[in-house]
Length: 276
Image (cartoon, rainbow, N blue to C red; front, side, top):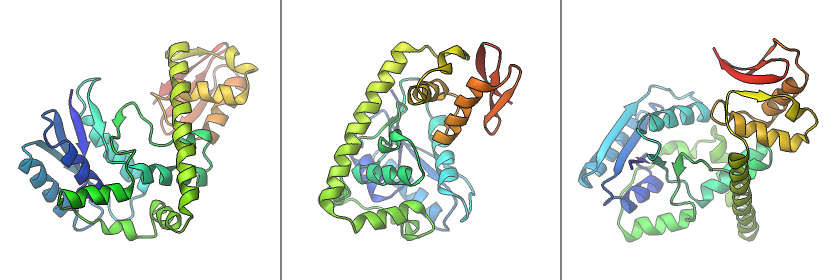
């Protein structure tokens, strides 16, 4: 089983790489966004680190520019990482930790996501071995093992929402933040249980009956629809609500746009997913 480690060169991913330095199944993957002038130096640093550990190294550079959004940069990075997977058993490993999980939950709430916004960083394609670590744990591990890492200056720029959230969280009461982390962990467990039920109850296809959704409670209908769409398109809660309304009310022969190039095709008794 191939383990694709996403390594940026920052302290988090350098610690992750050190943990897996003796694993022969590891491939060190670095995506150079081309956002900063020094990004090529980051790539060279990670390549040397991988070579020193005797591990395979793969990289890709993209000229995204300084105005690139966080969302687009993330999509490009994960697209590269997923392209390295060769079998269903291969996994991507990232260095997300407990503080990242908290930041992601807050960002999701600010964006108005549903309850799953409090259960972030969940994916069956990804492994996140450091989720139980805090940032303090990571600094301690790096110091104990004398690890050298790169500093990303964009982590201090206010134009990125995550940076602003991170700064605001540092000013909050530590006890309250610990309680919020406990809630997030419980939400993640609930989300996992719901996903297991959905997987055993509903078979994914590309044609589904409309009648099932007609009188179903909205919350339940949204959970089922999100699951059925999960391999086709990632939608926000407002987008899912509009899609549900289309399934319930559109006339046969109509198409509903889910996102760019992806549609719901509405028939009399069924609906299906279509790409242009």
